[in-house]
Length: 339
Length: 170
Ligand SMILES: Cc1cc2nc3c(=O)[nH]c(=O)nc-3n(C[C@H](O)[C@H](O)[C@H](O)COP(=O)(O)OP(=O)(O)OC[C@H]3O[C@@H](n4cnc5c(N)ncnc54)[C@H](O)[C@@H]3O)c2cc1C
Ligand code: SF4
Ligand code: FES
Ligand code: FES
Image (tube, rainbow over all chains, first blue to last red; front, side, top):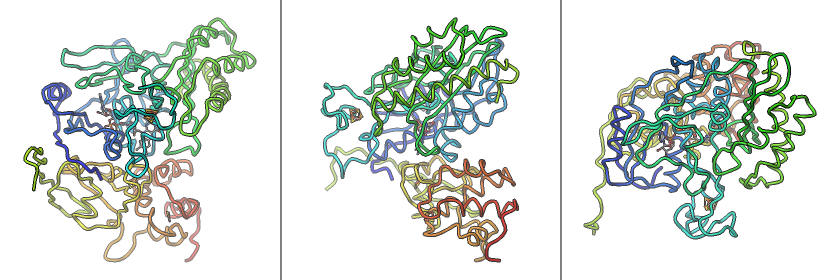
């Protein structure tokens, strides 16, 4: 039950939704699947006066564009992404990450755009407050931080828990954003500020339209891991997404991208570890060394009861396995690395 | 006395839902959830109100045939759609096969999770008449049960889909 009233209207098109949001004066949000927004409205993290629903806007199924890039409408449901043959073939890591989000009922309505625009989380923020704490924290306009009382003013250590964003970072995806001035295409990383108070660069009235994923090169391998406690209907403890290429006929790495999620205010790339990988033979000893290095490069925020040293360990162990899987897939060549 | 400066409340809107085959018209404000319509406006209390935050699955119903969480679904978003609740599984007081299998396997104890689990299972079996064990577990990952330990629930679904689990009671 949401305890305050708000207006609700449906938009017939993305353009109309953006125009409408730029026209109204009260605090207004887009509503997609609502699986992030509605629970947040229920606990009072956000109190929009108006919702502009995107759910009646028609959208096309995923397609390949003329250059072989996979194009997915931001309104596509996660269940459609996880079951799409085209996505499974062209970007199996994306399908795997969509499959890992929340539970089946949520994936039926949750959208790709909403997943990327989800609010950051912390144990305090995601609880109903009235029985627990009286004063709001920095994120809600107050002047304290409950889990991290020593934080300087306006330093918020809430974490960004999209299962999908790290995958899009590792795949070098791009995003089309529609605003009042038209559509722009940006690298996916440009969506994130790295600031827990305001984690997204999008302004109100800017809408994610589409995601674009470049074609996989030959000798490409991927690995995805979501660490959880229960294994279902759960936000990640840590997320890792690996995309790499090896030189033909061997295990020498020619390119690599590693993105880590759920442990910072936005998804992060591990630039130093990636640089160390290029030109290196990806044998088990080197993978262990790289995973060690990665666990030191990443700087996880303690979250949901997991300490920084634990998260480093978790990432070290699981990243080693994820890298091995990616190398194995790359070794098999493009044809067989789908599953 | 009402505050003269207070904003006008959003006007209630007439929406039409087909719930378990019956057309229902209800007046709702935008903040009203589908769960509230089903339980409080229409009076079908089989669908349970657990966490109201999308984390337990007790409120699962089928919306246009797909399993959704009615506690985080705005009723105004459902205008013109069909809804199936647990009440649709039985007819004239006679339980459906899926419900009989749950009864037989002892897959329900306190029963609070059962209506949601039955609807998730119904959605699964509709598209996949013989689901594998991992498929059953994945389909039910959004439904929490604090009593049964899940095994009896999985067995009931294997039983009703005729996959080698024999009835316990009959
Ligand atoms: C129990 C539970 C478990 C969950 N588990 C996970 C999980 O494991 N992993 C995970 O990643 N998420 C999880 N979520 C969060 C959420 O369900 C998903 O992130 C989902 O993909 C959000 O999509 P949506 O369409 O429902 O977004 P909405 O709730 O509709 O929107 C979220 C935000 O994005 C904005 N928005 C929506 N679409 C656009 C767009 N196209 N352009 C710009 N802004 C937009 C909205 O205004 C809103 O602020 C979970 C949620 C619940 C309730
Ligand atoms: S980490 Fe951020 S959201 Fe959590 S209590 Fe501190 S300021 Fe608030
Ligand atoms: S009551 Fe809807 S998921 Fe718990
Ligand atoms: S039977 Fe009690 S919660 Fe499932």
